[in-house]
Length: 117
Ligand SMILES: [Zn+2]
Ligand SMILES: [Zn+2]
Image (cartoon, rainbow, N blue to C red):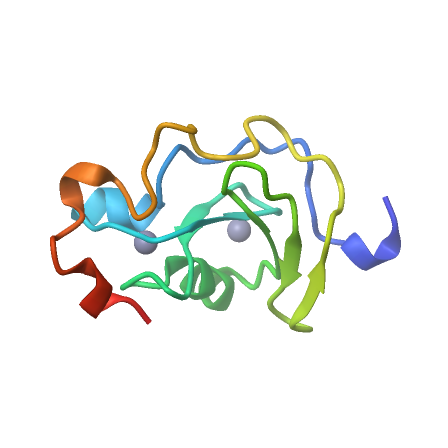
């Protein structure tokens, strides 16, 4: 692996199909992001709770990969750099295709658009 991706651990599977903190609290999200170091799944900055950014701030793990189907870009929170691709992470590399955006469907309020960032 190239040095620019130092900190990524491709062997760690994702924590689950949804944002860890939102699932615990009964929340919902717009898009999902995967920590490329520990596998934590968190919600994006458009989501009400922005757990992916909070995970970076709490853990110091800089790299995340999109956890949306068909997307394999990476982002480094420390340097604010985007990468169109990177190391192949342990499967699955996205949430289930049937899982809605925003999701999960049974927790998204009717006025969800007024809650996003
Ligand atoms: Zn969340
Ligand atoms: Zn992490």
